[in-house]
Length: 531
Image (tube, one colour):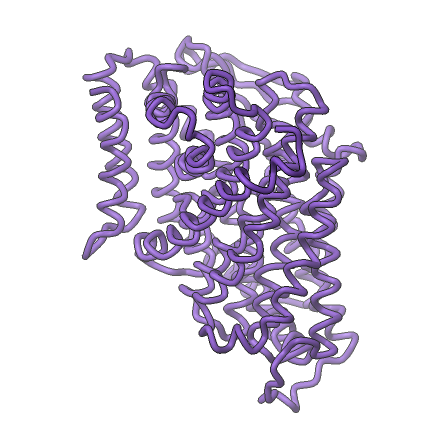
């Protein structure tokens, strides 16, 4: 019964979002949160204080994704109104008007690099609007962006899912490096299939076949350095791999190598060097700020995450409100429990870099006060429904994690592991994907299911490093169907009530990804590693 009540809300959610006349996420998710609340109180007999504290923690936690979404929408609206999007569209058409080239440069290589720098769903939020600005259909771009943003994710945000996601397991540095290496190898083989499946959402198979050489040049330009770096470092594979891949992709596209020749309909729309530099400035500044604030070798990451107490006040029974020197806002001991929640104002990629970049760029583009006001008003309006969806999603996640080893999430994971036993290698990645589906994060998936995966490997005699690598791969591939990411990209592109449609489409490459991961884990990984 525990397994039934743990799975029932998830099955119901999927049904509500993919059925005919599907409910929008901002309606379905809050209702599912209510269902889980009732199950927690009645079946699991969780005390009302614990439930209330987790709901309050969810309301604080939702500030992270919603402010990132607001920042991305703000940057997108600024780019449209200032003319940046139009200039970049003309420039990309000049590099090569071939749609496959444009999709691979922006949707694959550029997003790969942004994921390595930031994570948090930022790649789709930045890359997708550029592609829509180039004339690609918004819904198809949303699906492409979600599927493309999978291979680099295990090393996103300077490797956070790998080095932080498995931190509670107290693994040796050498083992974390081995896990990262195996993870990269599995992603390498998936990269031969998954980006092509993503392209099929936007262009037909004939078009891909005629440009397949360029597609694989772009793929390999990212994943070869990505794998090479992963063998001695788990922070920079995606960041450096994406940067190299982007440079190679642009150079090769400019030469027309491996690309079918296309007529450029905007032949008279020339972009001068000064116009291009001006248009690229906001994006360049955005990337520079992301990299500078996330490299652990520089002091800024530690400064923005500084949790040293600065000011605090007791808010009655609600908890102790604390502000740190790094402007980390925390609510501790919520309702007298051990539950805490925080919001990192400066580190979450919202105020920095999105809002700061826009404010710096506004004078450069000589935007009027009314234009700036419109940008901010439109962005706030566009975040209303995503806010409701994410509140429901975060409450759902928090309540499903209540109970530690007896939580609803752990019950699902353990039940699956016990049912498969020695064959767990085949299914391990899918558990990681379930974690991402719930939480919207490869890191949270690894934190949640890392211990389950590790204990399953030890009980069945399987390689711990291999199973944890499959967990990390699964957490990355789960990005394709994760509710948070789907809500985010739909919000940025102003797509309404299509979340269920997207899940029905993106679940196919996710399932294929899991099959590839299992095959590589059983056949190729044993040849390269002592597992």
